[in-house]
Image 1 (spheres, helix red, strand yellow):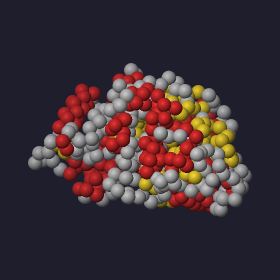
Image 2: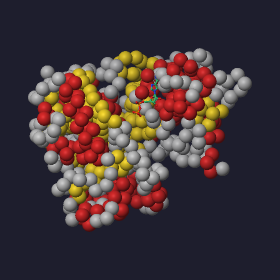
Image 3: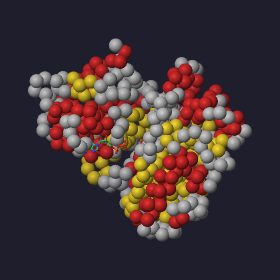
Length: 499
Ligand code: ADP
């Protein structure tokens, strides 16, 4: 039976997971990645370390799984999105460290873009709202600030790409491509015409010859070259699928139908909804991206994120010290029947959609002499669910459709209390699968499709097994009351830093 290998190159680590044809994990390996903060608000990675940790993870997963040459049928790649690398076409040497998605160095430039006519054009063409997260202004920064970079880029000597592009170029020995889902996070890509947008590239001064060739999310792109130390067993294996991490998770959760959605409860939360083959633009600050393009058909996704999700639980642990480990939050919260009127608005770094208030700050409100740390633990879990409900609300508003079910993954999806509260709030079923590695599984399944191991999406769908469904139980009117109070708490947390 052939194995399928997924590379999951994330913000804090590089991982390799070898899956069986049934979508079960055969072996995996992981190497941490160093974070560099050269100035306040700046975040960088070393592109060579991204590559080396990925190769180490690959080599180790092969050894751990005792996998022989010829047993791996295809490779799929998923990656931290938007992070940008510019490198020399001849030597393969990066001209500057990778500028990570979180890096805010181009925020002022993005404010200028937001105030210009280019802003509306960007939303129309790329589905994004101008922001320093996306790759475009990161490329421009390198060309503007690294001596000789612009001249060399104009002479065709430099290439740029997101992380999957960098890895594929290195693994294949020179194939310069980027999948449509990653392209759609650069702020340079026309998500309707599926090509780089000339006007945006021109206005930002980005020579188009340095951009990768956009490719679908599944298909035989290229093969791993021979002679890469530690991964000889992979020489000649085709790379057949790629997608940005959130789109890969949507795929891994088998959200193949319009209206299906997933939420990842990680440090932050990412909610993506499959909106089908016709894209739309949000009226409420959500983003539209390409979910995937397979067999000539493009599927779009509407996306919203919560800045502080699981990080609230970390704050209870590290900031307040009321729990020792993240899972303890559930035991503590279960000591009380309800929140006792306490609300935690975790606006530690401002609020995203639908509030978009960079000046909001965290707020704990509603305490009485009877308030205990158990109420605060409960308020923290509920605060995560309220924020996700706010995202789903605007998604329903933008699409005009009620969500039928929410599929979940990520570290904090381990919390039953959180998921039950989420179901009560949304009045929809919450479905937690057995396999929580949705991101890597999504990349593996894209590769399996690209390699022809699976013929149809329905071949994959039968693999997804539900571990537990959380159905709405609490009284709807009671939940509406709690939700209204949450909105009042949010109102009081807003604009705090401006006062
Ligand atoms: P990321 O990929 O963003 O680093 P993960 O998906 O690994 O995040 O999730 C980690 C988060 O999940 C942490 O913020 C942690 O506080 C939270 N978490 C982990 N286990 C639990 C649990 N049992 N209950 C609630 N939250 C949890």
